[in-house]
Amino acid sequence: MNATTYGLDIAKRVFQLYWVDIKSGEIHNRKFGRQELLEFFAQREAGLIALEACGSAHWWRRKLMGLGHEVNLIHPKFIRPFVQGNKTDAADARAIWTAVRQPGMRTVAGKTEEQQAMLALHRMRLSLIRFRTMQVNQLRGLLYEFGITLKGGRQAGVAEMRQRMAELEEVVPGMLFEAIKEQLQRLNDIEAGVQDIERRIKDWQKQQEACRKIAGIPGVGMLTATALVATMGEASSFKSGREFAAFVGLVPRQSGTGGKVKLLGISKRGDTYLRTLLIHGARTVMFKAKDKGAWSESLLQRRPTNVAIVAMANKMARTAWAILAHGREYQKGYVSQVPA
Image (cartoon, rainbow, N blue to C red; front, side, top):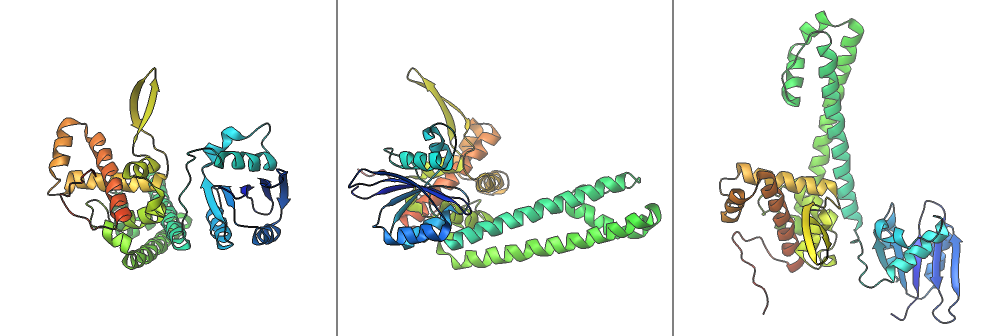
C-alpha cells in the first residue's frame, strides 16, 4: 500500500497520532486536540488510519472516512501485545500503528448512525427491564417482612399486589404504604417506557429490508432481527457464516499442542446481548415449534439439550449471514452447495 499508515489513540479531548513519513522515513508521534486533529487530516493525502474499537470509535471512523481516508477499527486485545514499556498515549498510538500493519489482522465491522441508534435503544430497553425486575423483587422481599407473600412471576406478583391494596394498607405502616403506591406507579412508567422503545424498534424493523429477510428464520423475532442487523454492520465484513458465528461467540474454544486440537465450550466472545437473544430464540424453536426439522430432531437425540440449543443458535447466525451477504430470501429446507 503506497499510502501513509496512521495509528490514532482517541480520547475525549486529547488525541495521540503516530505515523512514519513514507518519503523521508521520519517518525512522528504528536498530540492533537479534537478540532486540530480534524484539520490535520483534512489537509493530508488519503491514507490508512487505525483506531482502537472503543468509545466514539465508530463516530471517528465515519468522520475520517468523510475526509477521504480509509479507517480500520481493531479490537483492544489485538493491540495490547504491541504496547512497549509503560502504557501511555504515545505507546498506545505506536502499538495501534504496529498492529494494523500485521498480515491478516482482523478488524471490527463499522456501523452506521442508524445501527448505533438501534443498539442504543436495545441497551435502554434492557436497562429498563433490569430495573423493573429489581423493583418488583425488592417490593416482594419488603412485603414478606410483614408476613405478606405474593404469587411467583413479575406480572402475577404485581397484579396480586394491586388487588390486595386494602389489605396492605392495614398491615404495613402508613409511611411504607405510601412509598409502595409510588413504587407501583413507577413500575407503570417503566412499563410504558419499555413499550415505547419497543414501538420504535418495531418501526425501524419495518423500514429495513435486511430485518424483513432474516425475520423468516425460525427463532428470529423483532428484537433478534434488529439487534443482529445493527450489530453485524456490513455482512461483507465477514468472510463466512462461521466467522460471524465466531464473532458472536457461538463456536467452540480450541486448545491444541503437538498437532492435537481439543474442542472446549463455546468461546462466549463478542456481543453477549446478541448471543443471548439467539440462544433464547433457539430454545423457543427446540421446545415450542411444531416442526423442528429433521436436523434439530436428530441433534436432540445425539446431544444434550443445551448443546443442541447452542448449535441451533449457531446455525441461526450462519443462516442470517448467508441471507444478508448473498441477498437471498429465507427458504425452509434449503441445502447449500459447495462451488465446484
